[in-house]
Each structure stands twice: as structure tokens, then as C-alpha cells.
Image 1 (cartoon, rainbow, N blue to C red):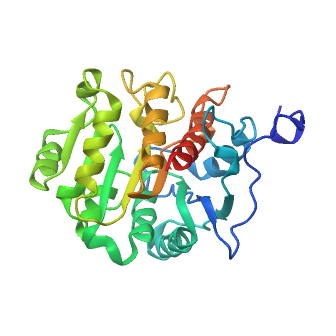
Image 2: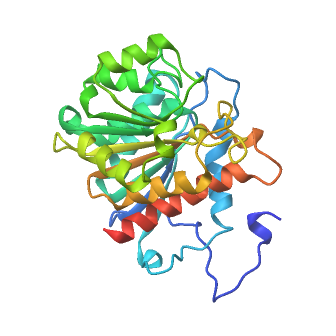
Length: 298
């Protein structure tokens, strides 16, 4: 059953199908940035924004005790061919435009290289004061320009490494060299193992304090491969032992709830490699709705 044949019930309005972003702006704006050309793993992630929009129609915008349905939602469409220097500039400009007209902008990729134009577009002239929080199994500090390098590229662009917090970094998914690089850059790392013994809400409070210490906007990168492979088979680099789906959903809601957070991206979901039940794409759709639920808490 696809979005066109889903049942209609006036007492159960569906999420998604949001109007284009207009001059009056929105509370939450969705934008697709389908990067994929420099992925270190073969990917069809360029198909993901459309799949996520379709998956949104399977859910409502209702959350108990929250006025999510009253939010103004908008869709800024997809950035055309966002890879390469010219594509990145298009993505950065489109992100900046959406952020300028929205309380919260959620960019859906695409591989993790979308984080560079998404964050730069959201930061604008505040790059020197801005912060970054990543939910990711990987440091993303590789050399070159790929889905394995966005954090390094943002720091080289002027982001202060001391205002970067990486949550969920996993054993056997990184290297000694990049772990040393993270320490040298001043990045705060909260490993996957640490999350077994710490309340998630407390972790996010710490991350927001560090990332927001400069007084500038905070961008949050939700790399879905931080999740356990059983719930994220559509992420090429997800591994057994990662976060549960509810944990990443909680982090998304906490991010949306913070007035420091201007923008969020959802990365590394390959809709063409998902399980038959589309569990990874559906999780990505729910991350948008959890971000909206957080926004309703502000």
C-alpha cells in the first residue's frame, strides 16, 4: 500500500503532504538534500527524501499532551544535484533560505555529506559562535570530501572543535588515528558504551551546553547509522549494538525542544537498501515528527 491508496479518515489526519514554504514562513520546514555521489559505500540515498515524504503519510502529527498539530509545517522541496562545489552552494543557499523563514528546519538526505551545506546554511554569519551535535557511530573526520568527512570540513570552515559533541561513537567503527584527531580538535566524545549507564536526557543537556557555549546556533546531525542494524538495515554502515530506535527518537525530540537548535539533518538512510517493511525510512520519518514534538515543547 502506497501513500496514494492509504485510507482516509477525517478524525485521523495524516502527517506529511505539507504545503510549499511561502513568504509567511513556517514553524517547521522540511527540505531534501539528496547527496550521494561521494559516499564511501555504494548508496541510493538520493531516493530517500521522496521515500521519507511517502512514509510520513503513514503517521499522524498527534503526540499526547503536545500541540504538534497546531504547528505550521512546510516543505521546501529537494535541492537539485547537491553534490560537488556548485551543488553544495545550491544546498547551502536553499538551507539558509528555509532557516530564515522557519523556527526549525529539518534537512533529509542523502548521505552524511549533506551536513556541510545544511549546517553552513543554518549558521550563516554565526559560524564562529556556532555548535554541532552529532548522533553518529563515526567521527566523520576523514581526509578528502565524502560522507566520512563533514565534521572535519566544518571545523576547517571555521567551526570551533570545542563546540562539537559526538554522541554514540562506536567501537570497531573508527580508527585510532581519527580518534586522536577528534581529541586534538577538542571534540567532546560520548561513546555508545557510555550511553548504557547515562540517562539520555542528561547527555543531551551536556551536549547542548557545550555546543551552545559560544552563544550561536546549534546544528544537530542525526546519522541514522548510529542505530542498531536491526532497526536501521537501510544504513550501509549501521552495526549490531547501536542505539535503539526509541533512543534516537528521544534525542530528536530533545533537539527539537532546545531553542539553541536552529536546524537538524537526517542522514545515511538508503531507501533502496531498506528492509521490505521500510523500517529505516519509517524511522527517518518519525525523527521529523519527533523534532516537531520537541518544537511544540518550546
